[in-house]
Length: 323
Ligand SMILES: Nc1ncnc2c1ncn2[C@@H]1O[C@H](COP(=O)(O)OP(=O)(O)O)[C@@H](O)[C@H]1O
Ligand SMILES: [Mg+2]
Image 1 (cartoon, helix red, strand yellow):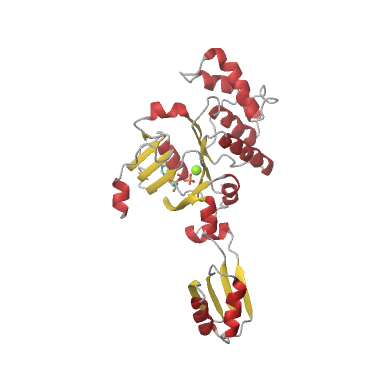
Image 2 (tube, protein in one colour; image 1 turned 90 degrees about the vertical axis):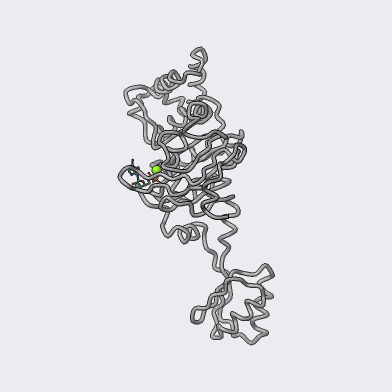
């Protein structure tokens, strides 16, 4: 299948909670922020949208939420086309985008009461109970009466999450929900995300932190410079980064031949080192085969690439860029 056919195929409902095809955004200044994105977010997944700063995550999320128009391509959220179906879709989506908009002069509770009052489908008779439940869920009950401007960044972020949780949602979209939080705050948000996901809510969260994605997500997509680098189940992405077999030897040509015979793929020779994708069989047998063939083995082992190294290799950039 070519790129153009993928871009032209309209995603259908039931394909996933979020499906984009050829989604592209070029800002007025000419900046190509998102370039031909084909994303499929399975319903019920905790989906990590990973990429360094400036890779197009927020721009994508703003298109998904109907806040900005794509330059080209299509996006479906909960089976409906965006931005056309924004009014029908948004009530089913809780969103936290680039820090919540809060009134500093109001208490946390009053911010939520006001937010809830702006929702035309929210029943005013149950408003106080809804707000109390949301505050409790994010652990802000004790601080509910404090003015929001006195909140720490983590508390503000949690208040933003509480706003997203006022109504039951089919989908939560969280843009860098742990950005700027201390390790304790990050842990709290992560465990909250896990808890939300355990009731079947699809969670789509962006992050520039790889281990965060590894810790909470079932699926992930990796962005670099507006383009999708890879996507899939986190377990599969990790499996794809299996370490490489490294043999150190003064007989690299013979070693390479034997490794190929033993089923090793992608055999690479550099001076006295031969590296390869390890074959499925017992590595002790592979080592024995080298020795039997007369290869003088100085070193034999598997060099494990971390998932982080693999992603950095894929994107050519790190994920711990500050800001
Ligand atoms: N409103 C805007 N106008 C022009 N360029 C923008 C705008 N917003 C973001 N960009 C640019 O688009 C690119 C992607 O930005 P963004 O989507 O915010 O990435 P991320 O959320 O991954 O950090 C960056 O190069 C950024 O400078
Ligand atoms: Mg962003």
